[in-house]
Amino acid sequence: MKIVYFSVTGQTRRFIKKLNLNDTYEIDPIDPEFEVGEPFVLVVPTYEKEITEPVTDFLYFSTNREMLQGVAGTGNRNFAELFIFTAKDLAAEFNVPLLYAFEFNGTSKDVTNFEKAVKELGA
Ligand SMILES: Cc1cc2nc3c(=O)[nH]c(=O)nc-3n(C[C@H](O)[C@H](O)[C@H](O)COP(=O)(O)O)c2cc1C
Image (cartoon, rainbow, N blue to C red; front, side, top):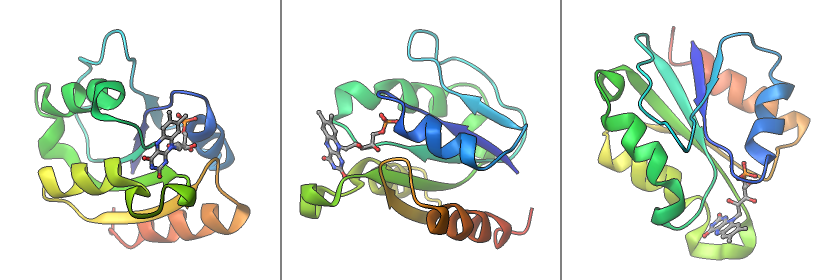
């Protein structure tokens, strides 16, 4: 399964590096119009909509929203009820499961749990 992600301060990117995968794609905030062309899981940090707008633009581009299989979110639990709201909102908007939530760049346990959640999607 391809993993697509967005990162503003580098935490999500650090998490993705820990997965040791070749098949990843980082959404470009300047030019989000990239067609993935295969099923993928999205990993997103949590920020106000203005900041995560490239992710929405990316998802609405071409066939991307049809290929989206699930969303995982990274955030900070100090934000309480706003914890990973970006991932939650995107999962609801695009009608796909919220697969996993973690803080910052994730622990080794988060890596294992995320990999398991992706595997359970069956692709
Ligand atoms: C300005 C700002 C606002 C944030 N707002 C939230 C929030 O509402 N909810 C949340 O769970 N995390 C929030 N975070 C935490 C980030 O989403 C979290 O640190 C994430 O791991 C950052 O990923 P990135 O470095 O890949 O951008 C916020 C961080 C910053 C700097």
